[in-house]
Image (cartoon, rainbow, N blue to C red; front, side, top):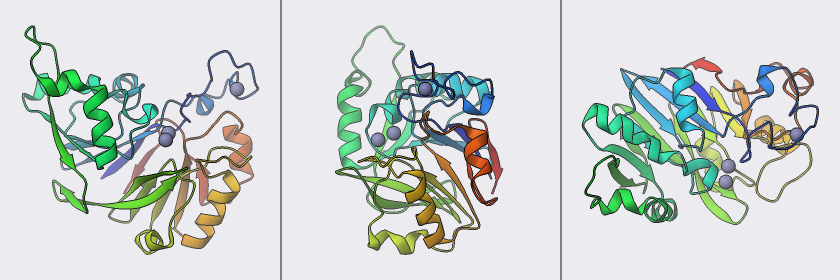
Length: 252
Ligand SMILES: [Zn+2]
Ligand SMILES: [Zn+2]
Ligand SMILES: [Zn+2]
């Protein structure tokens, strides 16, 4: 199985529109971050976690040949707004695209993309989705996904564990009851926004403290804001903990 980082930036993306800071104007391609999402490819299947406003550009960049399912962490704009672009895969594959989301997230998706669910547009060109509510672990073509309840500001959302890898973006607190679900990891992908504390995201220091507690073999940080330059931040981190970057590919 391969895991690709489709995007590793915070909700604005990096560079931020109009910003002239050192990271937003950096010539290092690792400092260009689209909105946060990952792609899992295994047994000829392609599953993405979240469809960001950059989903189309990410799929083009990676030459994504098909899409078998979308799994959602939560309903914020930077995680759902690319969903319309999955329609091309529906046209190609002639089957509705399965989507998996918690109740709150599914309600927002049904509101924002009401025209898809109404299914009564007479002129064609609209996608089709096959919605599944996440109520516990679920299986996608032999790969088991365990939802990890985490807190994002005042919002309960999901991280996901598959095999010995976990993807936990947009998190400000991991409840004690979720800690056992994140033990014995090979790879932990974790939210690390910036140095300064933030009400809805882990800072770099908080993310580092969680890595030290959970002791995964390797950790990668994502949802990164423009305060963190790739090179400078990584050179200050231990070798087994690094900022991820768009296009980074891991063999699991
Ligand atoms: Zn986000
Ligand atoms: Zn900037
Ligand atoms: Zn969010």
